[in-house]
Length: 205
Image 1 (cartoon, helix red, strand yellow):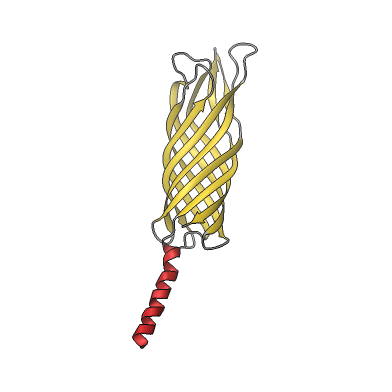
Image 2 (tube, rainbow, N blue to C red):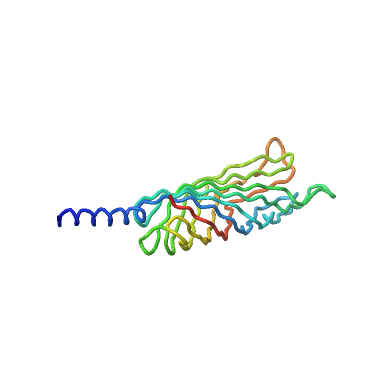
């Protein structure tokens, strides 16, 4: 009888421990992204082409690796614009631009239990930049991100995340960026830096 009771207690303890050690999560975020800038050349003049700050949306999918660490796919998107010096008087000085990130990486929770408390995250992937102006083409560049965050659980399956995430995109363009068979504006750059302040709801499953 006693071995049976011990077996039941062990099974119950194992079932209680498994969700904390092996839960996946889907998180949807909203927040604000700080700009970044490129270099614009107009004739013999060089100036900054600043990217406007504004709202950003993001999502992450986490797969449990162990009790404290997750593999993570992270993606974000922003509709913004570049402020340029127009080549022709009267032309628009604002070029609409979509910026998207897609990164594969992971996260690690400081207190040893995923889904609870502070964490660090990061990933490697690509930046997709799509200007909406005739004469400019889309570009894809390698990038990385690193984040610091905090997760507060409301229930075992629902939590709130607050996260600061920085991005670095390797542009490495000594020629003209966004050009396709001619250029309306000449934009160059080495590295693009951006940063997000995000708030999200996380569903564990």
